[in-house]
Length: 296
Image 1 (spheres, one colour):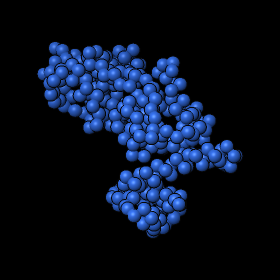
Image 2: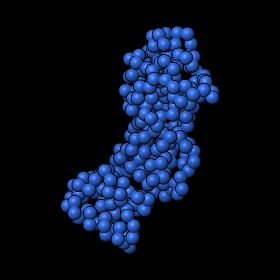
Image 3: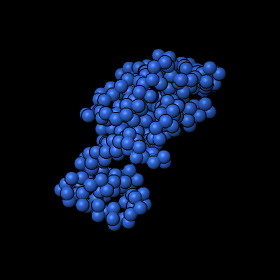
Image 4: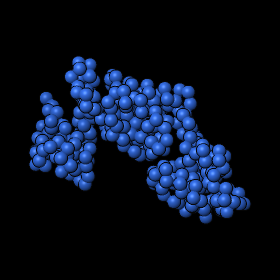
């Protein structure tokens, strides 16, 4: 029989990133946290958390944390149904989301859902190509991702498809690409890239220059807001989601100068395949947000 207080200790160490932080969260001593995890590990006969900095759950540890999160969700919904939850009882849902979505449409899409359900989000931010790994590892209950593939014991639903556009200021275009978007010009021109996981720039270059390996100066900007700011300041060019650049394109502050380099990206909602009103409500909220069109 699993004891939730031991599972809570395990989850807190991983979620908070340390034994001391877990102790403060649960109002226990650090030795009590360590003892609860040792008891769990003895019960299962294997290591559940790697004592690194920060601590990392093993495969078995991630499965136990996922089980605990499912129990939390179902117990909260049961409490709501029976009127046992207090007026200040919130449920925290860990959700994976890519930075561009978080900077633009995501909070608008879920705002009413969160207000109506006393739900808080623990947002895990990563590249849209990789957020589903968080779901696969049991770190989150759901995620926004680009992969159509469904994680085992989960389900996915199509949300929308949009384009990343190659943008820069008119003066940047004239200075660096006055003779055209050629391979030689690309090799000498700084391009903004979100981080080392971001493949959008490489995908654009492969479309325009198929089969050519082109190295070029890179300005790494791991912030969606600052990413556009770097381009607006004329420090680099870069790939920006079309729904993030509408005002700048309409005003002429930015121009799309490589229309053949558009990179289409489809977004999906992936979540646990469990029957709960909250997860179903969140799924329905996201799908309905895109049923008309991307909000402006």
